[in-house]
Amino acid sequence: MSAAQRILRETFGFDRFRPGQEGAIEALLAGRHVLTVMPTGSGKSLCFQVPALALGGLTVVVSPLVALMQDQVAALRLAGVAADTINSANARPANVAAWRRAAAGETRLLYMAPERLMTERMLEALGRLPVKLFAVDEAHCISQWGPSFRPEYEDLCRLRHLFPGVPIAALTATADAITREDIAERLFGGEVESFVLGFDRPNIRLAVELKQEWKRQTRNFLARHEGESGIVYCLSRRKTEETAAVLAADGARALPYHAGMDKEDREAHQNAFMTDSGVVMVATIAFGMGIDKADVRYVLHTDLPGSVEAYYQEIGRAGRDGAPAEAHMLYGLADIRMRRQFIEEEDAGAERRLREHKRLDALLGYCEAPACRRVTLLEYFGERIEPCGNCDVCVDPVERVDGTEDAQKVLSAVVRTGQRFGAAHVIDVLRGTATEKIERAGHDRLSTFGVGADRGKNEWRSLIRQMVATGFLRLDIGGYGGISMTGKGRGLLQGESAFLYRPDRVRVPSAAPARDGGERRRKEPDGAPLSTSEAALLEALKALRLRLAGERGVPAYIVFSDRTLIDMARRKPRTEEEFAQVNGVGAAKLAAFAGPFLAAIESTLEDG
Image 1 (cartoon, rainbow, N blue to C red):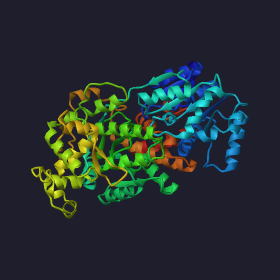
Image 2 (cartoon, rainbow, N blue to C red; image 1 turned 180 degrees about the vertical axis):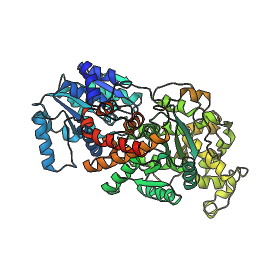
Image 3 (spheres, rainbow, N blue to C red; image 1 turned 90 degrees about the vertical axis):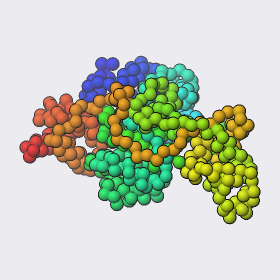
């Protein structure tokens, strides 16, 4: 490991490995296969990049996203590492040149998509080169049980047979137990050393709010985070643009980001988010991969995410500096229908669709959690903790009441109306509202007509939403949102079980600190808060980073991460020797950037 330690310091500029990295690197250097599951932002890439340099020869990295490949290659090159990518976004001459460098032994890491790697021509050509390591990034894509299964990843299972004796590293940020087992069996035939880090991010406060007026709720949430950097996730491109416009009209610096925008605009918005303080990035899930911004204070979901894994990965972009952060989700019945419909429309087999519905069930269970949300979230990944004291349910416990009788009324109304009408129609029947649609169907003559007149529409909506979330009712996602009774619901209607539910409360989430339990579990930020002069220096360093990144045609965070700039602002190096001690400054970056950054520090301190 001495060579690995030296590479970590001299190339990447870090004094010590983070938790989980050392064991994975040691196993790969010993020629063993490795499956690494580490939370977003914990340094997974170093688990294969350090061994790649220590082993020599060629390391082939499989990545599903062209943008991610290009960013990682750019970052490695700035660190002085010979890295290349062959991908569909490159012109053919660029790909040919990249291959020639690899074939000549000039390249240490070569990034490719799985479909390009697993062609017979490429495999045959690689067989003639000294390939020392394969790294499969976003490895959950290989599992048929994973939330982002990609058929082209399946063929990677041949690698261990085609290149016997070459270790393979599989890396992912989110994989539940069944997905991990499937990856281990498919990619490694069960012969793999697994490193699974804890999933807990105790500094992130978790909350879920009933979606009512999402624009008002979004404004109210951001009002509590004025001047702070954050991410607002929206499901569609159109909603992303609309939300950014709404927030900008309120005076926030809100920028949209989605795959439908021009590449130049996306990069400009991303650089602004990375460089300036108080920027709100309103985005689809197209935003976030590879982003390492330390001071994101919140992540707001205006729509239900696709799975627990997606939710966990997205909220993991908040609070990477260890300081308090907030993850807030708006959620309602329409979200459930929409997500069910997406699953049914997916081009996949029945077994996979069933699994995706179960994944969604797990997320709905989190949304409707009667006790600590963090306990529910981490149990999904097989991790058990005590109640956190840092979620909305712990801070403001919810009451669970017996709703068996009212649930039976709902079930009766659903059955008697033919199990094909939506929630709004069923509620009108229960409340005795003689709409034209009800009279035309003759539902005003049913015995259940008016039996729920004592409850308001919102109360019935809440009850039905929770019955759907807990499996007593099923949404007809293939039709028009009709609801029907499940086998579990039949048992409830027949008195074989009970139904407990949470009365909805319209609340403005408090900004109060967590209780003692949460305070004890909360991580300390990376050092004390910056002083006024240090904060001013940090802004100057960010502006310089943006200019240097623009000159090189790379995203700002690839020059230096926020963590590095914060360490620089604290240390205030005045010589190259002092600059070399900054966390994240390796030999190549010392040579490339010491001059301009030392000059900026000198100038800012003199002006101050």
